[in-house]
Length: 425
Length: 185
Ligand code: HEM
Ligand code: FES
Figure 1: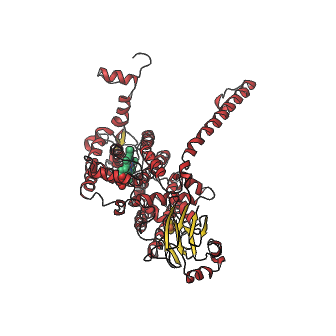
Figure 2 (figure 1 turned 30 degrees about the horizontal axis):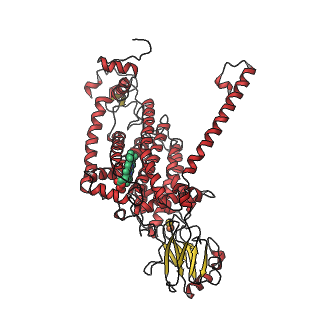
Figure 3 (figure 1 turned 60 degrees about the horizontal axis):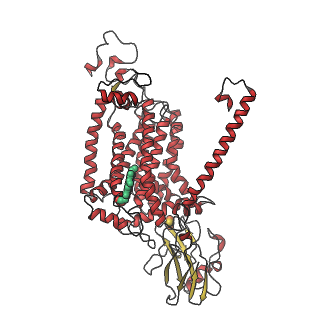
């Protein structure tokens, strides 16, 4: 090997020439070919890959939409309608993009709850988890900014209500809102900058996803048992074992997405957004997109403006502290007989909050939102630290292979148990 | 600081001179960056054409008692309501100290024009336009306006009475040109 060149195992001269100067082939092979993944992944481990595909599709369809979209208050609504009616396959681009946002949140929420259930945020994966929360925040911003672009009634009033959240900040709140708007109300400067940022943020997400995966490949993946792989027997090379599993999952997921795109494209949306924005009339029921409903319920649960806004942001910020709030040494909820119940109650709580968010904030819905909000924060701030201290976890298997291959456990092997485990598996 | 960069250390005088150079370079750099950030922040503030939005004149002669009109000012709706004697009475009968944002009705209208209430029609919670301008609209528990977004109620003086709205509907700067004509802004 010539001096100053990286070592390459490729025999194809062109690939080798490139690889020894810029070892991307070696890197891809290491990170997506050989990467030793625990062999006991279940289908919940598909969702990271699915999220990556959705992000790519959003960027591609978004760029194409942008070619026919006009970010001006007088033209935005009509340009989206023109995309729908006049532009070739415009309806397809828009429906993929519109429903893609929902798909993105479905996938990410499952991905996050997977991490929550299997304790993937615990040492040593704290930073990996926190980068994930950053991605979630960026996604929330991106989806909100995008929703404003078609400039329908819901777009306009979502923009108004959400930007006004900042007016709750004491002293500087009003100036911040004026600054966000670039005027004294949501208007043309607002739409323009929202478009610029909606275009930018997905690429920032790509950057953070890169860091997220880089961190993952240092600590290695968690798995349903929540114990670290002990030997080569506990892992499989990513390719072909998990590339094929991810492809299968992707196929199923794309069918699901296509069902919405082709058969119920507006099912997840709100009809009021097909009415052009009118700054003088607020629609009687403004509701955010479904993926924001639990947070919206938390906002409305509190009769105080500033406190409501603090809780709204707190609901996501608290996720950053999870690695330190959960005091249990055991990762997987499978082995946590007490925590398990609180976990599932938390899942139910999020669904209930989501439902309340779609209902008017009065009567029973207000009471339920308040109870739901208390449990949401109680779960993270009280239950997690305490249960971890008092719970007696069930015994963990000695290794990932042990429960399925009794002889290959971590301890001293019984005589005759050294037969090749792969053949038995 | 220097200890971490040069753990072997040793040259006492050299070290402090280098530290000083590092610090001054960093400080000048930081000031430069900060100064350069400001144009980017201020770029996003309202531009001159937005700031230059003129004042508007509103003719009130066609608005009967009990009716209201909405006009657009600085991109925002302004509510002008011609209050009935009963509504004025209701607004005055309140014990001001019990309000969230204590303000007597007299401070929210102009002397001698008690029947005219002029307020910015933007809910002080999160900026929706409250209902109550049209005869068929719900006007909330206090006969003024009702915000459908998160359920704030305003009274006949535009004061926040119930729900999450923290303050009263703001009264814009306006003056009467004649008994039936006002200038807002
Ligand atoms: C993180 C990825 C993204 C998410 C979650 C997202 C989300 C959204 C949402 C929710 C809408 C509103 C759809 C509707 O109701 O009509 C939208 C619209 C739009 N997005 Fe994105 N988007 C993403 C990436 C992009 C990218 C990279 C571009 C590139 C320029 C883009 C360009 C547009 C355009 C032009 C519209 C307006 C047309 C329309 O409303 O269909 N998006 N986006
Ligand atoms: S915006 Fe009016 S009650 Fe929230």
